[in-house]
Length: 121
Length: 165
Image (cartoon, rainbow over all chains, first blue to last red; front, side, top):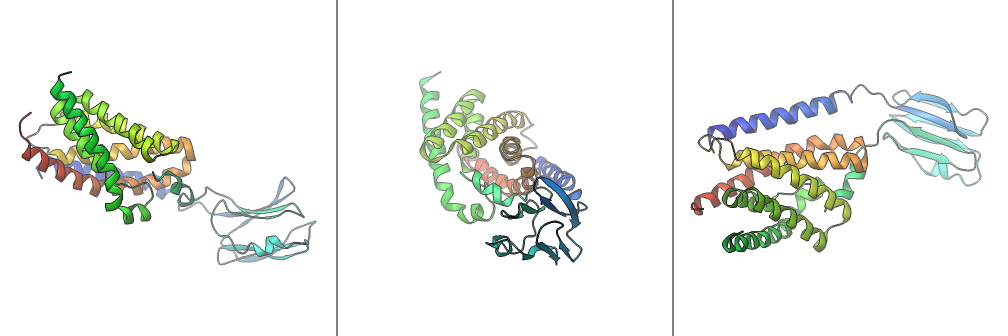
């Protein structure tokens, strides 16, 4: 281990730090929103960090937001798969009620862990 | 190309292949926790090849290693990843070896080339997976530091044991 090696290591740590700062630093203040989509239109957008109960206009479906998680609380569709989907909290996830053509989606970029598994040689 | 160089290239290539196959057993837990992270033992061979035989033999050994490894156990996506990472890190290794030997040992070379490997991989994965992969890049780069140091120590050992060209 020579003197220059320590310089190179310090430089690498600095590089990683800068990378972290730029990638993670700005991510923090991006608040997540729950989008309610009926048909092909976004009818409403609710902040994920505010607990509410919201009934969707025009269809028989109620959405509950609690502890930064969303779930379908009540639905009038026959199969009730949307209610069975349970709670979602990550960006990019969605609950879909096919009979009533309703999509409850959390916007934002999808976290990488589900995707990086594919690259392991 | 001299016969001696050719033979050495062959031996180094097969050593690199064996190492990249065997490192799976060393780093299983590492790979499970962080997908895509490897120790990079084969990098030792490629760098040693560049130190003793020059840039082009190392380039050929590096590329052939990636291709043969792909034929043995890879898929097309992992080929694109390793190929880009390998080429980028080969160029960085070439320039890192120009650093004055008095102050910089092979640990520097190894750390820099493993960083470059990850950055190269990062570029390709953005093409494949979109920009959301960027958030995984700091993890890879942070882990490339200890891995680079470990392989660098091994390289220093080899250089000490094999001093003549």
